[in-house]
Length: 352
Image 1 (cartoon, rainbow, N blue to C red):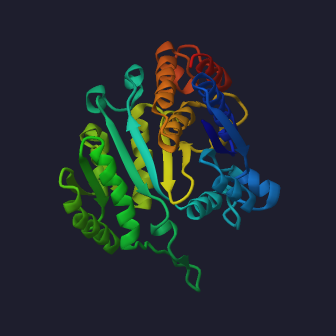
Image 2: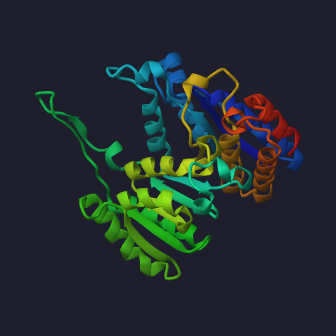
Image 3: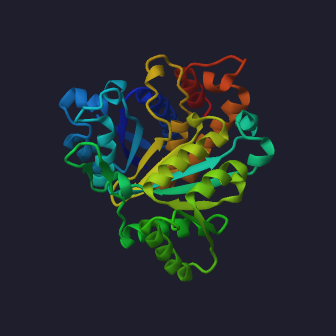
């Protein structure tokens, strides 16, 4: 099978962790007789430096022509520390989501048996955790009208949703729940926000089409609390953009490290696969970043974009073997030997 994959390394540690995922993907392709055509393109701060745009048209063309996109991370301190910067790396991510129609971020949260004591939460609270949060990506406060009033002392950001935007995300949530534990939780703030009331009534109207799915409705503040109390009580969760941004980062630490969790962004055109961590500029170029989240994102890509479940499972198995064998970077090594990013990637590729 020929796989056409757009490769967007991005900024900071992005290029380093993406390189390791490429090694693993190439090893899988060799083992299972596939051919991968990688096409690299710029995005984020690296794209701004090269051509003044965080998501150039040339990069979009590469993504549209690909079967899937493997993405690293974006972000650079020189933009974070300049509040007056008019062009920022993060604008490229929002533009990419809009132009590719990436309306649903799929973020699994699960535990690894060999790392369960690395979690900041007690073992008995997190054992058996296996949940997925679906975050809406192209609506809400991040895309609403914003600005400042004439005196400059009052700022506003508007949260707007249409019923159609909610329906298409909820449909994915219901369908995913049907393949898992048949439980769906709609996370909102319907006691305060009108947009959340639209979310709740829209999902309620869809329940009849999925009679086997048990649906619950919870306020986001309560979910934020319960995620650290009983994360294993959740199966599939759906929520709007801002709430999802916050909750997925909270859930990511359950496993013991943000460097372990993969994600996918699905939508109208080409789907994108990326680790949930940021660009971690302090570690850039030091060969110390954990590549496993990017490698596991590649596993999601094989299964979701190409329907290659055996290949995806081969990646997950070798990741679990590396963890059990202690072939890990410094964030997971503790008092044991810490391996370099590139050394972990080499070990994974050699053991596929």
